[in-house]
Each structure stands twice: as structure tokens, then as C-alpha cells.
Image 1 (spheres, rainbow, N blue to C red):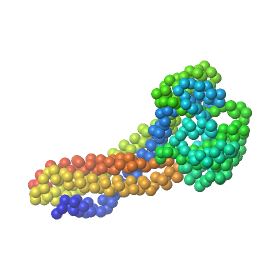
Image 2 (image 1 turned 90 degrees about the vertical axis):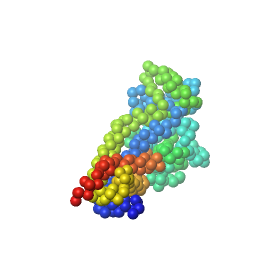
Image 3 (image 1 turned 90 degrees about the horizontal axis):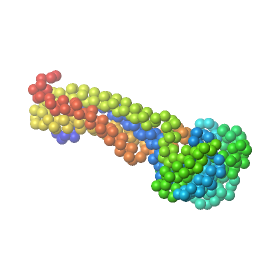
Image 4 (image 1 turned 120 degrees about the horizontal axis):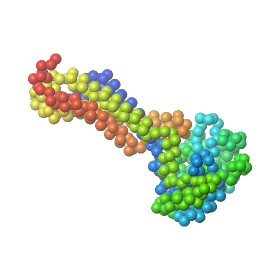
Length: 382
């Protein structure tokens, strides 16, 4: 009898047990994939941050503003190529659940500082000529079915200025699938027309584009020294450090995901290991017969490991296929609370390796026990 046929025959002997074990792997791999994409979404800002960009915020907190006049002073520092400023708007579109980030931007410098977020030239020109113009990320536009030319109403919450009307003049795309396409931009001059007088000369933060990443430390120190002991002291750091500190405000997401993943790993290992141990124990006399007719000890070990790995491969593959279909649905259900959940090829490969690793470990101890089994003792059992 061929080795592969023998493995399949033993697996199919207890079909219900096989289905339950495969199902355990599938559910575990689905959870693994979801945790992986959530971790990636939270860490993506730091991962894709441009090494040539700095972010300057108020030293007290990001919710405290900075004077608009700081922009020209920062721009004069050697090594600074361009500077842009942003404000968080925090409005509501139709319903509070329809969250997406809205930023008041500096149209003159936005594309220079963020060249990876591309807008067609004709759309950007229309935006510059339209005081109520807006640019939406491709993800947000797709989510709400927006198209260029639509009129977008957004109700102000932070600024208490009622409903704002925007003309969607363009849609931006990221050059990389990992770029954030969920934002909504509108013009600084339109913002200053409607907000209270006390905040018209204040911005939320500055983003600085450097001539070279090597200038990052020197320029960040120069910026903070320039405004030291002023009413609006600053804190300047690299874009990756800023993104990482922003994520930390949500708690230690990486530790939480690692903890859940570890629990899943050990639970799956125990369940699968117990299943394989029972399977080997039920076939003790058969394993004795295999040894009696010439199967070597290593071949018996390989026989048990092959069963465990095959179950892991089928269950893991099924779980990852489910993840490919389920994760886009979950992303849509999150309502834009996270950047796009991207299940990359690397994650799929890691998931399959995780499943095979669990399968190998779960089959190792029962396999070693079967390998060490003496023929006379095996044939004596009923």
C-alpha cells in the first residue's frame, strides 16, 4: 500500500473527529489573520512613514494648537525643503458611525510634503480654484459612493459652526497599497472664514519635509530650540516616532495581540496534540503490525507527522481562504475606524507556516511514542 494512501485512510477513519480538528485550525487561522491585519493597520503609520519628514506639535499635547506664523520660521531653517500645516476637523457625515479623518490642509504645500498621495493635475487645479473644494481618499470615496462633482455636507462638532458644504473636486490615491486612503481634505482659507476669530491664526501641527533624512536630528532640535520658552513650545520628532506615539494612545496593541495569539497557539496545540495522541493510541496494534512487516521507526514517526501536517495544511488553508473573504466584510463593518485592513501575501505565508508549525509540534510527541513502541507490546494490546 502506498504511504500517502495509508495516511489518508487513517485520517478518514474518524470523519467527525477530522472535521472538528480541521475546523479548529480554520477558526484559529481566521483569528490569526484578523489579528495580523489589525496589528498591521495600527502600525502602518510608523512602517510607511517617510524618513525625510518631521512632525511638529505643541509640547503640551497635540490637541493644543500652534501659531500659523511658525511656518515661515521653520521654513527658514537650513535643511528644510517644505512645510505644511494641518488641523483636525472632526465633523460628522450623515451619522456619527460614519467616521473618517477630516483635515484642514495647506493647499500650497500639501502635494510637495506628501508626494505619495497623488491627485490628478486637473482635479487638483479644480480644487485650488474652488473655495469650498475638497479632496477625498479613494477608500472613503468608495465607501460612500462619492464621485467627483458631488456635494458633501459635513456637520461640525468641534467648532460648533453647523453644517459645512463641500464640492468633491478630486480623489487621491496612494502609490502603495499601504498608504492611507481614508482622509478627507479641505482648504485652510475656507476653514478660517467660518471658525471663531480666536482660532483663525492657529494650526494643529506642522509636517516638515527635509532635504535629507540625515538632517532629521539637527532640524528637530533647531525647531524646538527656536520656540523654547515661548507661549507655544514645540515637540518635533520623526514621522515614524509620531505615528508610533499616536498608536500608543490606544494602549499596548502589540502586547494585546501577542497575548491573544499565544493563547490561540497553545489552545490549538493542546487540542491537536490530544487528537493525535488518541488517534495513535487507538491504532497501537496496527502500528505494531506495520513495524512487524518492515516499517522502520523513522518511517512510523513520519507516518504520524504526515497525518498531523496534512490536517494542519488543510485546516490552515481553509482558514486563510475564509480570511480572504471575511476580512473585507469586517473592515467595512468597522466603518473606517482603522486604515484599510490589508491581508498581504507575507501574512498568508506566515499563517500557513504557523499552522504547519502547530501541526508538527502536535504530532511530534505521539509520533515519538509510536516510534519507540515495541512490536510485542503493541500486538498485545486490544
